[in-house]
Amino acid sequence: MGKSGAKALVVVGTSSGAGKSLIVSALCRIAVNSGIKVCPFKAQNMSLQSYVTRDGGEIGLAQALQAFASKLEPRREFNPILLKATGKGSQVMLMGKVYGTLSPKEYYEKKGFFWEKVRSALEVLKEEYELIVVEGAGSPAEINLLDSDIVNLRIASELKAPAILVADIDKGGVFASIYGTEKLLKIFAPSQHKALKGFVINKFRGDPDILQPGIIAIEDLTGLKCYGIIPFFEDLKIAEEDGAGLPLRRYYFKENPFEKVKVVVLRLKFIANFWDFDPLVLEPDVELVYSLRHEDILNADAVIIPGSKNTVADLKFLRKLGLDEVLKQAVKKGVELVGICGGFQMLGEVIRDPDCVESEEKEVKALGLLEAETIFVGEKVTTQVLAETDQLGSYENLWGYEIHMGRTYGDLFLFKAKRLATGEEVIDGSKKKSVWGTYFHGIFTNDDFRRGFLNRLREKKGLKPASTQINYFKELESTIDALARQVKKFVDVKELWSLVFN
Image (cartoon, rainbow, N blue to C red; front, side):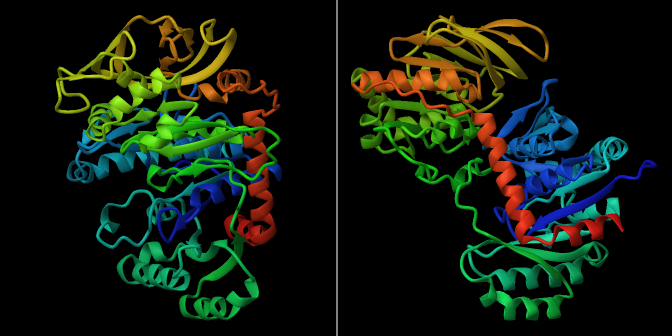
């Protein structure tokens, strides 16, 4: 590696969903508040939740949020490899751009190539930052994959950095998972095992004194130190990475002085970027439901077809469930129907894929609710945008971002936008009565636009407009600060920094 004084801490987990991403965010915020020039890093992320950097690179959403926690603008080097499952394998985003769609076998055959790209990104970060907080993926003890693992303790070995293990007690079996992880690494990857210094127990509910006999025993059995027990975080306002973990209803603990409007997001098989809807949940007059139930759709005030990593497969899935006709019934009832990205494509008349970019279907009839049609091409659009509209109310400087292989043509007039990565000016989106769609992810992070959307639903329902003062990005900042306070309170951060900097 290059000559640099940068240090690193690697955070791995006993499993996916153990809480690594949020703990990395908290540690980054604690570090930057202490005057340390810190950045996040995840060599390889597998997620359909993604974000576009200012220069048009696509990275995992978790790394973008970790960058915000570090008080940095997200950049490609923070997540050099992003894998997006498509049904045909995984679309590989390498340094923010499409490398190709590879099967697992093809991907593993190229691990040497990808490892060098990871090392190159680390070289850049080591020259610019004092501390790199690294997030692992899944478990570091997948013994069938250790030879090709480029995201967990191989990073610790490369950086000569200590690692801590995050264990999720909420699912049970916490001591077995810590013990098993440590022992498997000791047997199958002794050189990587040396980096593992301790563990943190996450998502605990109850009296921590009850855990002490187990902690003493597991410390003795493994030689690992317990650096803290973190209580379950109840009021989390950050989206999960994995769509499979989405609850049926999303809500936060909040006072509710308003009668609610019901917004239903279709729970697609390949749902992508459901972060789009987190801002809606913050509003006290919203019940947000992820559902495919006919009753929910017909009784909604608004229905949203979200982004999808396989638009055609999800469209066929909706048809199989009879939801194409249900959505048309809902529109006749006056329900506002919105499509975001892949959902926008589904609302048009036809989807064409002559080169089988996304699926094996060269042409599929879409829902026919908007006068537009989509064709898939090989080049992906990834850019942030600034937009304006006078069709859904009058708004300027609306922020969002595009991530799509499709190109949509037809009756497009909804937004005038400037693509920040290229400077190109474009027209986006279509509207027909109560149906509208756009390629813009993040559109509901715009506070005035979101409130206008909700008040439109309220007025249709005969309710008075509400004037809540929710600032989404301030709420996101307050959540990161709350996470940092919680981790700082229940984890021995001073000892962690001693591990890193001594």
